[in-house]
Structures are given as C-alpha cells and as structure tokens.
Length: 238
Image 1 (cartoon, rainbow, N blue to C red):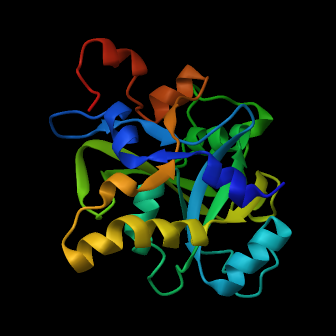
Image 2: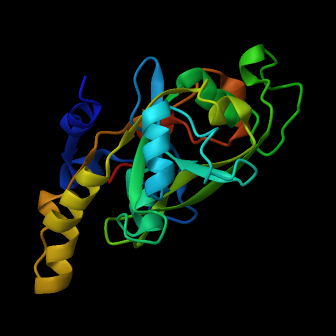
C-alpha cells in the first residue's frame, strides 16, 4: 500500500476541523489528546534530518542508525500543527523531514501510564506498561497554522529516553515520510499569506483527528485528561 497516499486521503480542511475541536474560553487550556488513530494504532510525529528519516522509513526503527543518538530524549507529538510550529513547516535545520509514526495503541497507552516515572499502585501493572526507559509528559499550548498559541487548548508531548521497544521498532507499526505533504500545504496555505498578504488558510488541509481517550480510567486520571463528557455543559467546542 502507498501509505503516503493513504495518509493524504485521510485529511480535511483546517477551517472545517477547527469548528469541532474542543477549546476553553479561559486559561489554562483544556487537556485533550487530539490524534489520528484507529483500533490498532495512533499516529505521532517527529522531525529529523535526511539520514535518520531515510533509515527510519526503510527499517521501521531508529536503533542501528549511526547518526541517531539513542541516549537523547526524543519528543513525539500527536498534534500535526504543533509539529509544524516546532519545525517551522519542516524548514529548521535537522528537521526537514516530518515522519508520521504509527504507534501501537498499547504502546502509546503504556507511555502515558508510565510518564514522569510514575510507579503508583493505581496504574496498570500488566506487561504492556513495563517499559525500559523513561517517559516525560508535557502539556503545551496547541498552535495554529501560523505558529500562534491556541489559548483554549493544550497539546500533549511525550519525551522518550532510551525506551528500547520504541527504538528497536517493537512499538511501531510503520513510519512514513510526509514531508512532501507538508511542503504542499505550506505552499498552498501559509506561504501565500506571508508573501502576498492574502489569507489562503481556507485551502489548508490537515490530518483528520478526533479526541483520543485511553480505555483505562487510571491512565486518564494520571495524565489529568479532561473528559469528553464536559462537552455537555462547558461550551468547549469552537
């Protein structure tokens, strides 16, 4: 299967997407995980240079790449637009390749469960969350296509340090370089506005995302996730 074409087919207009995304009208922003996911996997993003991106896509892992520092903490994000902010639409040094990584849902949930070195009895103790390595969780302001922070919503980041099952690919279903899609969207939507003073944001396409909630309530409490149920009484949708 052409997974890049599959990825591009599962996109929507930004102007349509933002209408159904949750957001609070007051600070601090709400904590929801907006992600592209199915029954088996969750897509996360990272940005790398040519060598690392090529190796990762060809091998489905990062371990073994001579230019990849396995001891360094690497940050994964479910937010496409946060990745665009961080990499400046794949233009910053060593971030010219944007990788979409299909993580196994069990692995993603295990990262959440063991984030910030939690070892409380309340968290799941099955083998799926017995990770070798460290996981750090951060809630940062989400960002719009121009890189401005979104006041009412935060985006999740997970820092992985020496998580063996991620590095050696056991947690990964596939890795796809989506840089061509990123460049097309930058050219079609963001770049024209900066150069000609016209707003072409209505042409911007982004991946379809929905609110992701781990099935285990203990994980949801651990990461202080805001509930979908608040939509009934908190006016959180834009």
